[in-house]
Image 1 (cartoon, chains in turn purple, blue, brown):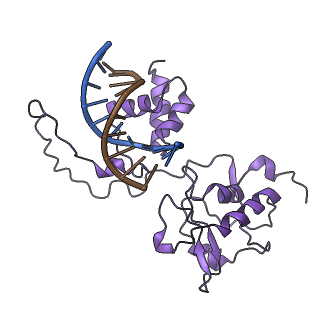
Image 2: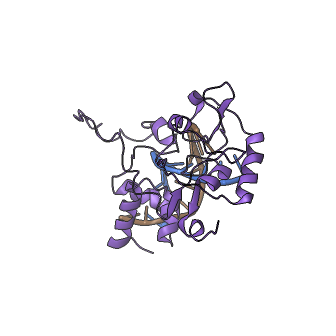
Image 3: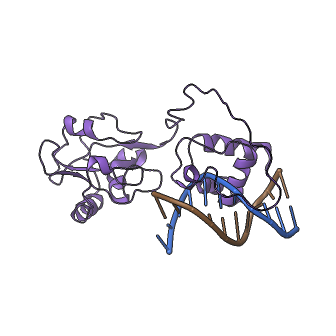
Length: 205
DNA sequence: CCCTGATTCGC
DNA sequence: GCGAATCAGG
């Protein structure tokens, strides 16, 4: 496969949307994530706002290899006011709609509690009752028993931000397990928070 | 071990 | 220019 204009276009688009190199590679097909990353660099659109691979930020200017002096360091007096606080999340989450969270007893989580959820992109008010598959709920219950129970301050892009308990009491914590790539929750909670539009509709009540 | 992006370097 | 191998980190 070669980098045709179309493929490069797709690459730019997805990279801009914050898609990971592997996701882009998968989408394009015929290339590995390495190829994608390599291309991204050659195109000069490397640094994105948020990359989970913290390796990026960490080693912005790491090792100096042997051989002659590298090109003169670019005198970057770049005057940048406020470049990109928020790159472009919006576009993500296509055929998925968030559902209202329920606690173990099927009781809707209070608005107050929802407001506390730091959450990434998707957390609309979304009223309406919901119906989550028994399997998913069971899985959540199970997971919550073994959750890490971290505090708000311990939340990161890699920890499940699913809240458990009442924020007005001491019995409140966040799941904290490893998140599903690109999602704000762990696998189990992603299963309850996100459901394909198709499976939601026509699920008789 | 899974994943992420970054860099190197032979092709 | 390309991308596998490798690295560095979560």
